[in-house]
Amino acid sequence: MTKEYNLTIDGQKIIAQEGTSILDAALENDIFIPHLCHHPDLKPEGACRLCGVEIDGGRMVMSCLSTVGEGIDVKTDSSEIRQARTIAMELLIADHHMDCLACAAANDCALLDISAYLGIQPDRLERLRPSDKGLPIDESNPFFQFDPNKCVVCGICVRTCNEIVGLGALGFINRGFKTVIGTFGNKPFTESICESCGECVVRCPVGALAPKTPKFAAREVQTTCVYCGVGCGIYLGVAGDKIVNVRADRERPTNEGSLCVKGRYGFNFINHPDRLTKPLIKKDGEFVEAEWDEALELIASKFVQSKGDKFAALASAKCTNEENYLIQKFTRAVMETNTVDHCARL
Image (cartoon, rainbow, N blue to C red):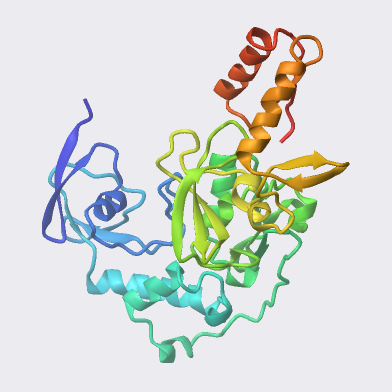
């Protein structure tokens, strides 16, 4: 049985399980603590230095790296804490390109949210020397782009590629003020081992990693990805009568919030003008549209004529294991032939 601790955060008494970080315990109880480098899917890093809190009357710790304990008293805001956070944020903003209106993350940027929470004032930023690094934007990937000028070097993308994807396509390059995120040899994404899964993109707290053509949905539809038999849960973002984006379903046990490149970015075929929306039947040497009842009756008659060695079945890797089982069972038991093949390519 997991042990539970009683603690107090900003005067609010809460209960948290053993091993839970103070930051997670606060967020689970709707107590906001600023953070940039923390993500629930990843191991805590403590890199951004924004989630500092005071414990038991004055000792400041990083809440993402400190676990709960019995009877501890946590204060998330004080003059000392606010001063430390403000300085850290000002340094981040001074080294950040501020073209927010043209940024794909403008409506969901943690940097803007925390800046507003801390009340960062423009006159304070004028004291700091702005960055003039002007690093080139990597637009080589067909699905997303990387703007190092907007990167806050939180390391979420690096940890995502290591801990979740297991690929290690990204890493830290250089040291000190010149540290940047990049691929091996700082080459373009298309020349690296990146698989374009987009896991780093969806976790980036700013606009450094962002879709090339960000489009916002009016509504979402919960469904299942059709690219293979895994059955990943997805939400299709719909605007009008078109699908404009895809996000993973974190509650689906098959993928738990992760997607491959095809599941995340391969949805344009749905709205393609060449996509078939009705079955086609060949008449007088040409394919013509038909209703489903007519097509199914034709298929059934052809099955009767082809029973035995004249029949062959082709299964698909896009089907589930259960569907492929039914295909081979139908072929052997009903069509009386063992001629079953498959295509394991997606």
